[in-house]
Every structure is written in C-alpha cells, then in structure tokens.
Image 1: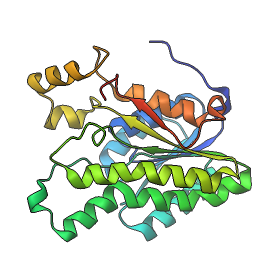
Image 2 (image 1 turned 45 degrees about the horizontal axis):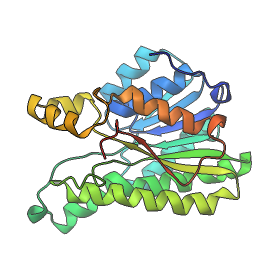
Image 3 (image 1 turned 45 degrees about the vertical axis):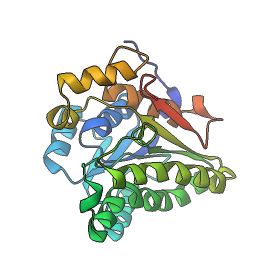
Image 4 (image 1 turned 90 degrees about the vertical axis):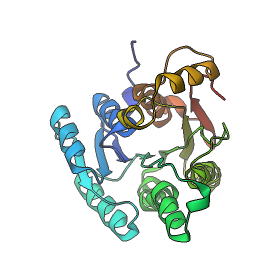
Length: 251
C-alpha cells in the first residue's frame, strides 16, 4: 500500500491517549512520519518505551498517566503543552474492551468502565480546547466502535460508553465549531491488534467475521491510523460532527 503525505500536519502538535500499543501506537507512528510533534499518554510504560525507542525522535514525547484520574490527566496535558506547545490535534483513543456479563456488573465496576472508556475523553477535550481556540482552530478525533452498531453482546458497559462517544462528538462539534475546531468520531471494526489476537481471535471467529464484511481483508491498526490522519489534516477542513467508518463494510 502507498499512503498519502499531508503537508498540513508537518510541525503540528498532536496529543494521543492510549498511544503505547495497538491502534494508538500506529496513530503515533503515523503522525511522527508526517513530521508532527506527538505527545502520547498511556499506563503501559514498557510498551511506551519500546515505541519511543523505535521512533527515536525528539519530537515524540511520552508521559505516563492513568486517565481515570482526572486531576492527573489535567496535569499531564499541561506538562505536554509546556513541552510541545498547545495541541492542534487531539486523538481520544484510549479504551479497554474487557468482556463482562451483565449479571455480574456492580455499580463500582460500571463507574470504573465508564471512567476507562468515556469520561477521560470529555476532560481531555476540556483540557485542549482553550489552546485550540487561541490558535484559531483544531481537530479532535474521538475513537468509537462498531461493536454497538453490530449489537455485540458480552460487554454492555463498554458498548454503552462507545455509543455515548457519538453524542459527545456531535455536541462538542456544535459548541466548538464557531472556533473552527472540528470534532469527529472514527469507528473501527474488529481490528487485528496484538491484544485481540491474544484474547479473542480464533479461526472460527475470523471466518464468521469475514462473512459479515464486504471486503475480504482484515482491518489492521494502520488502516484506522490513516483515517485519523485525514481527519486531522487540512484536507478534512469541512468535515465535522460525523462518523467515519473503518470496518470493511461489516455493519
């Protein structure tokens, strides 16, 4: 595959949550390859160190942060802004699709899953929006999921959180649009990350999934990263308040 270069991303400051592995790591790689300054947060220090060593760039900055801790999120984003400058782009990628039977969900578990999959996105936007307003615009990309579109079972708190992302995106697109800040949702299908392969990929599951897709190839993290790049770039200048599907036609 031959991919596009977006001159408008060169030198831009990009913040990515959950950037150490999976889809997030490919997003960090993709922005770094465009010449952007990338700050990413994660709780997995070993994976983050491996990624920064791989990229070997002074323009890529890692900060450890548990995004469920909102004061820590705010402090970490302030530190990244001091190091890299205000964010022109925010990618709200961090999430965790742990399975959970609905019968066993306690109020504490519910709250923790919402904190892990939704709440931090709101406060990340709140943290970066003033800098984007001062700069005259920006792009915010929230990561959704096609799991709730497909009526996937076995993880109802996760799918509830991901469905809520779409409402949050559209509301922020309205509130921030007058400042030329674009807010969109990228909707991945079943992406072949190492986590998915280790926990849930089986020959039988893959065959069932291929039957759902219009395209025969499986979705890889790089495919999602390319959509994120487009939405961050000036090429997407009139794209906001919408869902951008990267799921090979599986819905």
